[in-house]
Image (cartoon, rainbow, N blue to C red; front, side, top):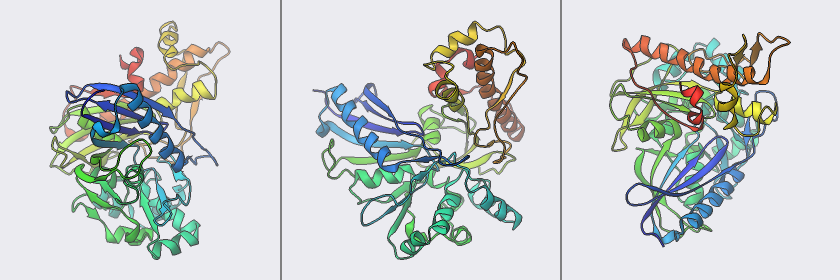
Length: 419
């Protein structure tokens, strides 16, 4: 039996992973499990919050079995999570009151456009560092409370709790004893003032969100609570860190200093540059909170690309072009070129630097001679082209070149894409 491990929970958009690290920071065991994606209407994306919690418990159990670790040997837990995905639950029962609305969801496009027409975009931009886009949690919460008056009544009575996935997992890990989030996740809600580092009362009023449903917010390095009455974990294990997935990747890549940059090639692509204590508002990019080496907040610029690896998942699952993503590297290397195909994977609109929620995917240049390999190659190239669009804006705003890009995410296994 191994001694003294740290449990890391990585809750992503399409699956959940648990990783165990020993005292030398070596990964000794991990387990991953996908969960269902739901698309009830065009542009809508939902998750089952209870299924996310169930997969989290399952991957924890399996990783402990693989590593031959007893839960009393876990000294601390850290959580990283898909950001902006919105969960509302009943404080008394702990049950979700609606499917989780995923960050990719576009249902609040009209609400964002109304706010823009009323001149609110600059107001939100200056306080949150974000643009008015359906991407963020605030308009999702506002939509839920407006669409379902019963939820609004319960919220005013103090019955409702809101959280992004970090808060939802924390609530369940602690048996409902801790309702909290960290600066990195809160900064993605559209109602958190990143200058004063607190919930913005004026923005909450605009979106008609009661402050009582919001979690407490702390630095990413903080004692968020302890486990309580879990199937696979003993009670009393401290949760010592929480961080949104892209800021966690920035931290994990060692980008502690201003100017250091990383890109995560996951479901989407997220280019993030640490700007230190400098809060900069730029054209087409988001200003957000990250953290330094001690878990304290710093500022960062982010270019959010909504569809990257998800384009390859679409080719795999819907178009049946291949069975495993690992096959694509060989397929494109045996394909001379893209054959004039231009692939625009705007399945849920375009993110940075365009922010067009009504855009949809396109494939141009198809001829009778177009083959599977050319389409796959053009899809991989679309990931690179979108990354360049963001980096060009970053360089323009910073007035200097980005000389090094640290990368992570599943698609980095594709050698063709990385080159």
